[in-house]
Length: 285
Image (cartoon, rainbow, N blue to C red; front, side):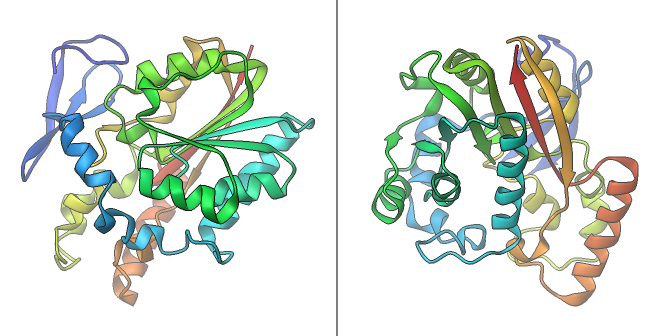
């Protein structure tokens, strides 16, 4: 990594050394970066494998999904979006997966479209929910300018090799006054920062807790300020930002003692404004 993709700084520290890669921290803006970055071919193999889509994280993403914490998160976000953009129009979900959020958006009255890297997931989205989904790497696809009233990225930006390139493209795809929502892990979250300490109390299964919170599929970890500054480049002002807790159940950390431990640390994160994940909602000026 020669330069930070956000601030162009050349000054990095090694925050962590894990099996197969390190986590670098930009000394200027605090962005966390995986080093070395995996190749696009390596990522292709992962995201198009059945093993990836069979993970617990996607356990409630089929046609008959139930209203769990993730669905409630989507519903709450749609409510906030509709408060900022009362007249419902076109909505693009980048990295739409199997299409659950698009289905909720359609039911709420939006004209929904998706972009998805995995052809397998895109087929599910189209078959189960009837949403049109373009397949491919989002920052390499042709996206029409001034087309969308709302663009959402749920757990997407941290997976991309070129997040800045994608946001440049998406900012042009938004209409004036359009809304963009970004949901991503918090680089400065208390649980993430204390993960080497926490793993002493959480059994390895099959990987250590630190390796779980610093997934090899997460190429970047942003802070809310990172996202605010990045969007500002494209005349998008963050009008709302809020943080969300970790969901230990999705990571197979379901013992009562583990849940209490992680909930305690996440409560501390909430108090100091450094929870596990966050949502930033911006409006294009």
